[in-house]
Length: 300
Image 1 (tube, rainbow, N blue to C red):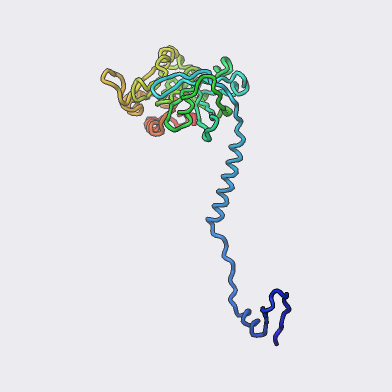
Image 2: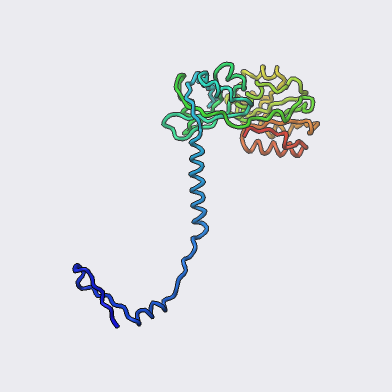
């Protein structure tokens, strides 16, 4: 039996037929199950969803425009930068602990930079300014920042991070030894710590091992006497000193390894800020000496 279907006049030469033979052929065709999508397909979709969620979270950052009130050289490749936040008292008051940081962005630059606050927490509320020590790195937002002028406006985020949890190394008589380590611009939050006060003059042994390539690269030398009068012994360590240098040489971790002088590990607190290799090696030395990792403070 043959069935002829009527088609529109525009297709006069098309003929479709079905027969028992053609139907039996269809029944004999193998059935193919659809393969499930591979796992990596779902992983890609999940990663895309996470990226979208991260983008939404980034959009929640509150940016506050603020003018620069000071830009001046601090050392080779380092600059003192002060930002006026007198019109944002809530932002100024949110700096509550040394070691905290914020983000800064400049118009027409897509990528913000993270900056540790160098001034002590009470400074912003009292003076209406945040102070920073910024390293000018070629091709970075920080380089552009260091090239701006007083009065130029930047945008800063809310204060971020938990900072140095100094309460963990209190009271002073329980932690008479505090050893502080900083390299390069890592001295910035350490300045905030020292100048905010952590009862250094009530402790028997407070040392700051501060590493730089040479004296030209060492910021805050004009503050050393003030810091020492507050109870902090300064140990500058130069990796490439000139021939007139008679102090510690090499890297901070090596200088500390030579001295150590950790007589009561259970009564020792530590503060670290700087290069990753330095912080890791110093931590290994201290833990081997019996210092608890709970007493090793970092701001990141």
